Length: 107
Ligand SMILES: [Zn+2]
Image (cartoon, rainbow, N blue to C red; front, side, top):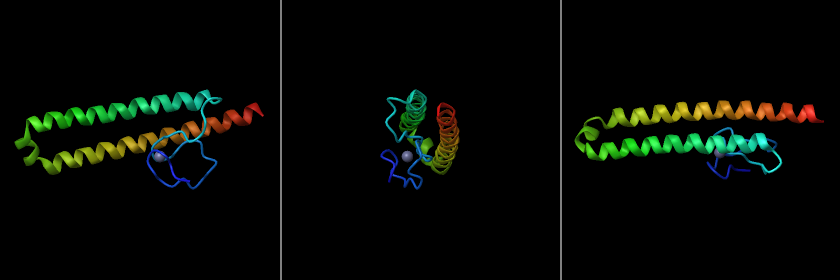
């Protein structure tokens, strides 16, 4: 199956969380931990997008500056996005692991 959010191929279909974007892939109604995780992820993703938008707004006001520093700005965005995605992936794996442990304890 593919992740409904980022479209990446999910090889392990038993996985509850997309390892690429952190999207929760299962019905979260009876899984409060995953539900909380999804809310958190939506929050931080909004934070990043908001941050980027505000910087882009600033940049249109300083078009000359942006043109002069295009490569630097693009590189900055790529770096911060990569770090962001890496962190989300790390958290996704952690929460996935915790979810499995919780399941094992309850059975
Ligand atoms: Zn995804």
